[in-house]
Length: 623
Image 1 (cartoon, one colour):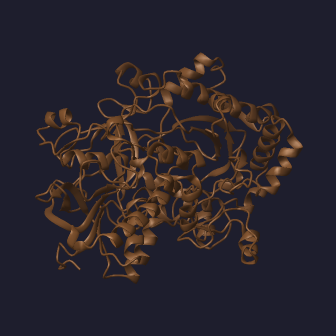
Image 2 (spheres, rainbow, N blue to C red):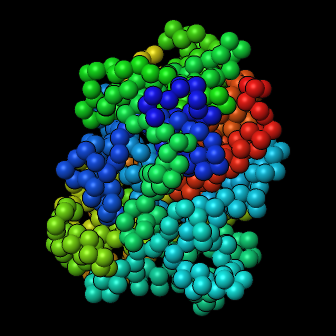
Image 3 (cartoon, one colour):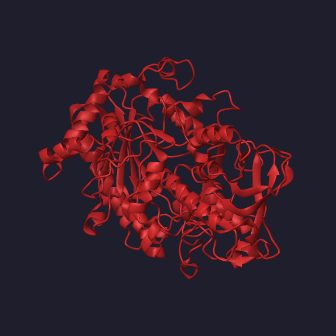
């Protein structure tokens, strides 16, 4: 296929992650010819720790730092240097480590595989904002079902054949979803205590503990994706559904390889290809993508190449779709002259379309850690070295139950902050118990997973954040350079009421209520972070400001009216540019749900419908 006519493609798609890979596969299945550009390589090859870092669910932290597939961004959380320096993860002159993946499947190759649907209000907001009713949650749910192959509700999976299915799950999608709660936990007294006491303490805080427990049992015993007949959002204790097959990671990579194998004449995957700029027709429409062919060309690589690569072009007869994610999509737009005119002028880039919203509105979750030392190491981690051929790896490789089938999460708790409760908003707090020491991202963070077997970390995640002030800006006009990224956390941003900060403090206090019985009984030896001395709201606020991180960058090319900072219309078109769309995490006006990847899968399926419907209406000669 390397000898194919470069104008012989219907679509050129940049980026093979949750957005681009899903879209490319669906278009190719529908008969379109798709040229897919990916800067990385196959994430299961190229390093001595592969394919295990990719395949083994428990190894996802090591995948984040595997040099064969990692892009090591560094970002700022604050403009003020003194405040930024108070974060121990900050590297002077660089920022805070923010892992991204370069490889087939994008960040689905290194993420924690959690698959949770966004809230209905996330979709309804876009429908209200744009007037496009196809974004309503009732309509979007069919895209969730198109993606999901639910394997963790076997009774309902069988009963659906009889027409009985109140769950709303998808049963025939391309992405298999399982749960990993290994039976081996029953032999670990400490873990059993954590699960039992946490559940008991949480239930005791509810207005009707017994009734709530019965509802929980009836609703799937913690299935957060069960679509409730009442329309209410899930709250309470849950497990985390994972994108695995036989407890081995699956994702966009497998989807793309399957489609390319079945339709080799329709889907071409160009690996080791860094997109550098868009190519325009004489009428100002986009007709292709310029890219450089070579390994490790982007300077986010741990060991970037000195070569500038070989220049190539891919031409599209229909459209070009950017799916590079919240950092790289706005970068490529700006490098191509689409963005804030004053900023482009600073870098000597001729302006094609003055679009001020490009690279603005950047959003993320806030996450912090509440870390504990247990009275003894976890029995389920005995012998764990997190490498090939240790005891747990052999159990996992042999198909047996064990902790390596898990991403490390023992359970989750979904709750609403006081502000969300007061305003009738969906749950915005997700607290997850991890059998590991995890306190954010820094170079070498994965070693903490390997070296500490007596830690319990409650990772606190604040969703539906109010802050919309983050930015992605060019560092230079060189496409091999990373952009400058600043999330403008808390008071640095647009949350004037400081609701986000207060919500995180509430979540820390919730975790402390749940761990109090374990501390008093001696199963937890001590709270290490924020530590028992951090009692007041002021002390906890300082801890949150100084240590918070995120890893769900979104919203930097949002859907919305151009005069209100929008970059895209409701059909993913870039305002003022013909034949150019964006389909990735950057398109959301507000960051959706708790874990963004399921929402990106859904918009990619929607985008496929949009493009195919338009192709039916528009013969190629019209382009």
